[in-house]
Image (cartoon, rainbow, N blue to C red; front, side, top):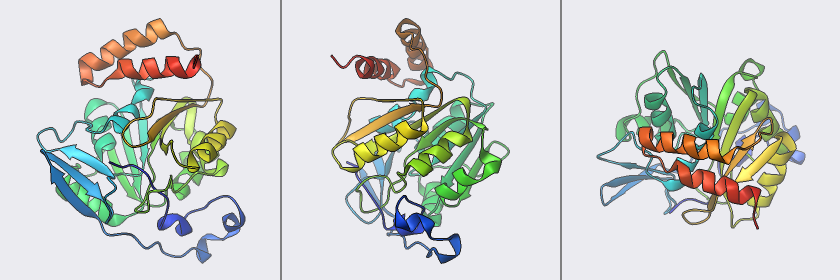
Amino acid sequence: MLIKRKSIEAEANYRSGPKAAVTQKARRKPKFAPVTLSELDGVRFLHFGTEWVQGAMRLRKPDAIELEYAQQMMSWMLFIQEPQHLVQLGLGTGALTKFCYRQFEAAQVTAVELNPSVIAICESMFKLPQNDERLNVLEMDAMDFVNDENNHGHFDAMQVDLYDATARGPVLDSAEFYQACANCLNDEGILTVNLFGDHPSYARNLKALRFAFDEVLCLPEVHDGNVVAIAFKQKKKLDFTALYERANDIKASTRLPAKSWVNGLKAACDPN
């Protein structure tokens, strides 16, 4: 399954180090790997020309979140019950975007995707709705989005899943990127991000996240190395009794395994 990656697109994005000084005019237009599909046992998978899975949809349940790591990306729901604006960086198959759009009827939902072919395939093969007054899928660079001051301080939750065909870690992983993400969140905002626990990029991402956020906790590894980190703009005092009650509500209304998220948070807070 997926769920590792780094970058053909990386040269087109800001990163830390010497290349961070390259101006936008000097940045080359990214070259994208081909978008390909496969199906198995009633599940359609998205690939970028390799065996790595970039997302999945169960054909009989197109609005459900199929992959466990993607379900964990919704763990901010333990803390935020009535979001007003949600952001997804990296569209994948649109699973998180569709779920948020259907589940939170009062919320604005924005998705940012650099590859126009991914947007097109989501619309044609993964049941992504058309943009409307609540849904806005943008074709643009995630770094440009988070650096736009017009986006600062507005969002309740941000879900970051930025990978490409080479599957070696997130495309954007610098402290500058995560600080810009934090800037986009409101004071109680939460970021979830898909990391690769068995890759050198994991420690680098955690260090960058902890630079930008008051607290970062990691849920248990799933699939072939996926680790979802939860980053809090302001550190929260975790009341596990209340969190388990909230998890029961989430399970009842969405069927998401929210109790396992609380178990993971508890383990992260008390690893012994």
